[in-house]
Length: 349
Ligand SMILES: [Zn+2]
Image 1: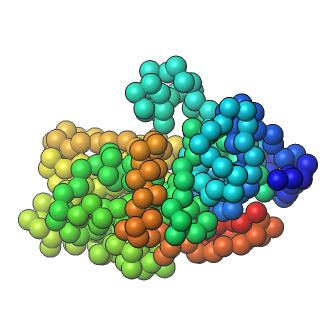
Image 2 (image 1 turned 135 degrees about the vertical axis):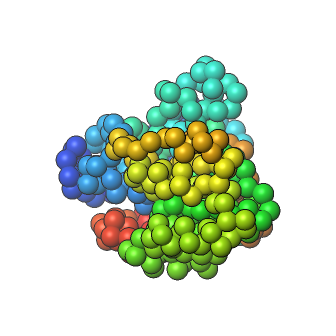
């Protein structure tokens, strides 16, 4: 396969608001243990939008090609790569660089390796025709899963990790998901798949459209205010609160609502980032003996599981796929996501 020398890419050029542009970048060359992928689909993440507005709470190495939610066909194999053939459709994990000797990596928890560096902020991401990735990150996509759906594997894995791995949901449980962004909506779907009897999406009047989609994809209730959530919970089960809360909102203050709504001995799984300091008492956590669990990223086994679920049709994230467009339309997708009009846009470079 002949590969061009340069390619258009969505690049963050500087650390200032709006410093993202379509720019010609060199096509990467795969080194030892690496694979060059021809990108077939790349999702726009809230974190890409944050970097576009320079409101991220992580460090970025500019200039950098954005995009960490992607799939592609194998275009070239670096030295020593076995097990994959040119033309195969694969999805890629996000832990682009890890310390292979870190004790966490050695026990399979490389998502928590302090040295972990990711695509799209530290290393060049996939909003381009080509991206190079270490072969350890690749997973085969089932034949019946199209590329634009396979590009949604990453957020599905985030939701699986938060809802299934880092929470415990039993059949009939009452679950509240705070924050109906793409991750929250996928967490609601995962909660139903885990057996939850009732799943309440907690948002604001601004989230009406996105929550309506969530109601078609697993959630059983949608609430636009804290009072509405409290009233719903009083009428469910024994009225003592939610068995499990998944906090997927991008503001730390929502943890206060989580502690209000969770039942005694219940569980809170926090997957949403929020750099703001909190200004409330944690006494409810103590008094109710609540388990509070953070959730970050995902691991190999979760990727295999999620792709298998997509292959059998048990998991179908298509309701949340709002728009598929060429890479030249990146700005409309970023702006639409920022405005909350699009749940998950996918670009096809
Ligand atoms: Zn993401």
